[in-house]
Amino acid sequence: MTPFDILMVLALGSLAGTGIGLAIGYLARRQGPDWGSMPRRDRIVNAALVLIFSGACIACLAAYELFF
Image (cartoon, rainbow, N blue to C red; front, side):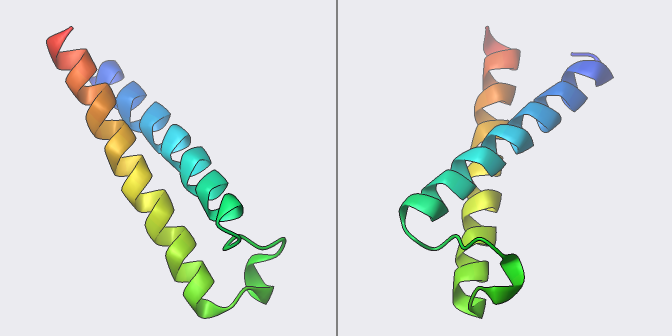
């Protein structure tokens, strides 16, 4: 595995995780049109969704890269 592969897994995983996390936050009606106008709890939930799904996507892509 080259450094380029590692950077690619990190970049694609964080991009996909951000998209998935924000989409789920939007569908759960936790995502607002403006970050500053959202309540603190909704901002924390959105940040947690993005972090969790980014980590999951990075882990899936890394496993795919290592084993296939």
